[in-house]
Image 1 (cartoon, rainbow, N blue to C red):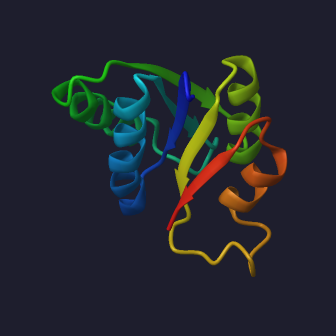
Image 2 (cartoon, rainbow, N blue to C red):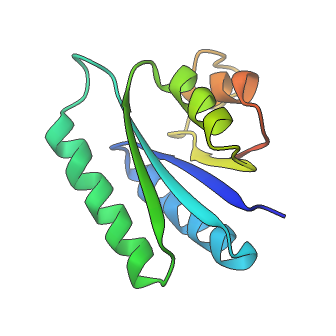
Image 3 (cartoon, helix red, strand yellow):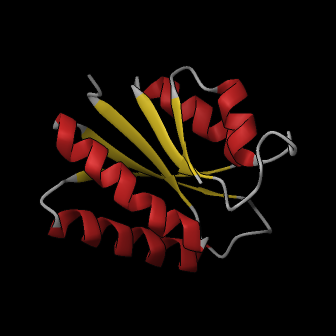
Length: 124
């Protein structure tokens, strides 16, 4: 059902918690898992993001799920939507950083829901 799972990861605590959901989904459906890191110029530390990607990749490798890693620059919601389209993602799995998406239409999760070419699984 889900051949390709896109998991955008950032430096939040919630991202690593959401990783468990992405991992379980990929295992259940024998999916290709794609980790996406979006660096906003001037706002994110590229070295810290690279370390985070390595940690996440190691976690998935330990669980027996290989993953592909994509790194991009830009506005997260737009890049996530573009990458989902490029790789023909069947689902995007992402967290909300604890923001109520109903009341904050400017959150990244809310924007991805609006822009995504596929279903978005938002993990609170």
